[in-house]
Image (cartoon, rainbow, N blue to C red; front, side, top):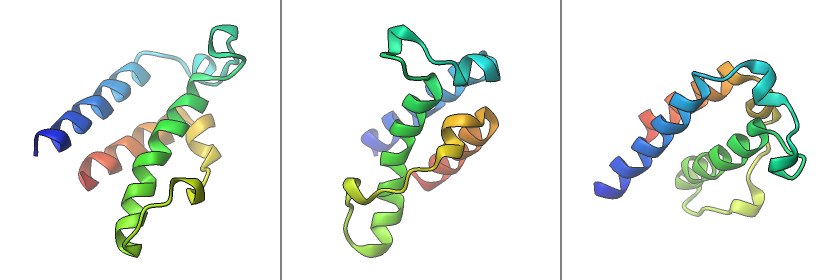
Length: 90
């Protein structure tokens, strides 16, 4: 249970960060992020959780076969909703 609570706390921390940045900042390419965006990094992170969620139904988790949901990367509100769903899942 401690691991689950720790992961929930981390997801809530990411959601807190997302609540204080603009849509523009979320999707703006930054040199400090090697030309990537905050949204791209958030998408990458959340997709690993989503892979676990979908993998449980299949009886195996394959991170390489995870789906890439570009909406997470480009829509701040959608990313926050995805986090809410993952917290419920956990």
